[in-house]
Length: 578
Image (cartoon, rainbow, N blue to C red; front, side, top):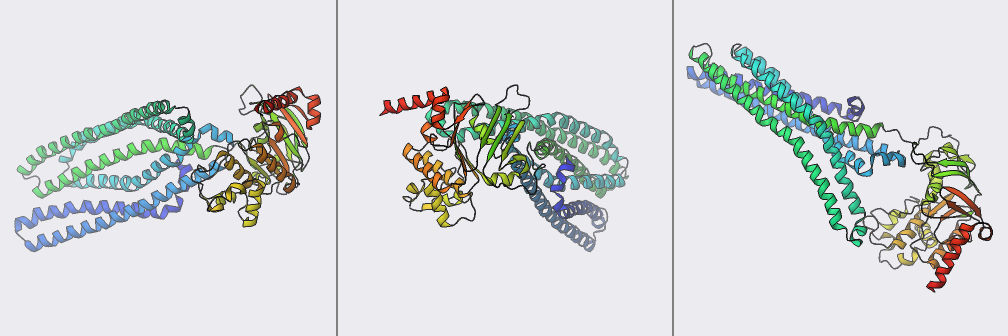
């Protein structure tokens, strides 16, 4: 894990080195202060030498100031290195996630990826910051204080033969038990975040079905699980402190008992005993700091594993087979006996033996019942998913020949779930063409019939949409997404049931605009209404993952029972409604 994560800390190696040097220097100067104090007690006070006392007192002040400056330097260096390391980790995770196929994201879940990008990365940056301070300061103080205390009295230092093994056993026991619990803690955090994400994303559904109590119960259950796991994890960490304090105080009592006897017998000076007390406390505090750092690192190991899992996940689709000269020259589309399923181990194919040919510039409609794999079929065109068998071609070449960026630049897709981002309408439309002019923006809006409501808005294209476009209706959101797709001037335009929230008159206007303004663009329209596709050059009828029929409206009315039944049912519905 260190080998995988260290490159993200490498830009801050100088800060890390400076921080380590400052921490070590801070500890050394703190350790020198008791020696000077010992000289004052042993020499200056008995001799009543005021100048000696003042001079050594001044040295103590100077040492304390130097230690303070080094401590401040260590804090600054650790902060810069830690925050930079955390930022690099988050960026590396985010950039790698952008390369994921849908199947990769589904493997982790969105909530888990959010936790790994935020909470786990924050724990790692805190670990580096604390390690630079404590894992340097504590060992330096421990070793140096141990050497200096032995130098003062070898006999008195024998108390460490009992104290140090006890401390080591306590720390090792707690570390072994907390490791699995901290990993479980992060998983419970994922589960809680998933409930929150689903609830907030579907808040309108929750309220319309009056299921707030049910959602609260779900949240309470997972929140309670997280609380119990946290109590278990941090309870083990907290118990470390009283046990250590017990050992520290017992050691101090032993030093007072045996050290007092040595002073009475004249074998140890009073000032040396005072310095020894200081070193004992520094040794014990250093051990406590080391144990707390190891506790923190135990949690960090769990977080590091989760981050490495994200970074090492191999994207299901790559550009390895792409050809440098591959350019999408037209919008022709071919499916040559294509088979597809979402999971390799699944026994059933989602798409089966799809053989289809669409000429460039054609308008193609797709009809089929729920679960007939209409969306799956069109998702293979911009390579959102990869066919396991058969070949999908765009512009006469297999989609694998193109880089995903080039292919998806040539294919505009308006999904069933219309997504707008926080910001203005203009900023959302410019996703389609970042350099689009005002005239081009309005032309796209007119083609999508979005100008009708935009002209009524006081700020027009500069209207703020809020988070996810919450202040526009479903139909308005659909039309804005269509305008955004049109702005790309794609070779292929895919509308996945993207006019379901608009009335039939507006739907007809949009289709007319497509025919007039996107003549060279291949247009694929998934629809529930036959009237939305009946004028298409060809209509595909999907059923249970198979292409059961294709042709014009007139041809399908004669040859396809499924199509004829759907058409007649919808016509009867219109008549009854009328």
